[in-house]
Image 1 (cartoon, rainbow, N blue to C red):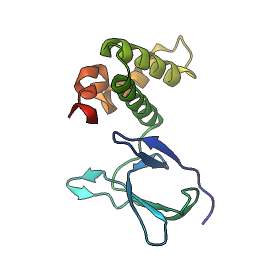
Image 2 (cartoon, rainbow, N blue to C red):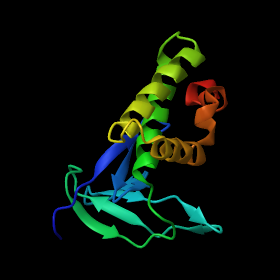
Image 3 (spheres, rainbow, N blue to C red):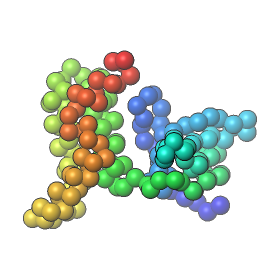
Image 4 (cartoon, rainbow, N blue to C red):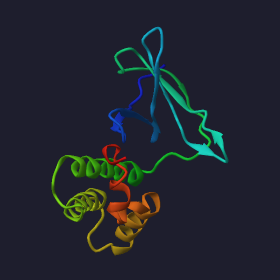
Length: 154
């Protein structure tokens, strides 16, 4: 199998999920041969997604991959906004700053990163980018609704 690019993103627990071809795969298990299975947990019409990826024992090489998903991949905006939501949750759990202050800071960083390559006078493209964030993560507009559910608050 040819070398493929992939990475990891923090999840809501203490672990890291695999990001491969703009799909997110939570860790499933370690096999007897010490390879690591990651399985897409997305469901469409109550049908589980068949997508999965197996990494070698050092988690540096893909050894197997089922590429057929029953849903589209996340967009660049979706992946970046998810990273910032996780960053916001971590800050809320580890600092005493007011939620509104944390949210304003992180949302500002998100907007700056997402609109970095968009011409400042192109308001339509900036609006489209921010509308996509709102569609993917509507709770990101109201931080108290998703920050409350951080694992320590359950």
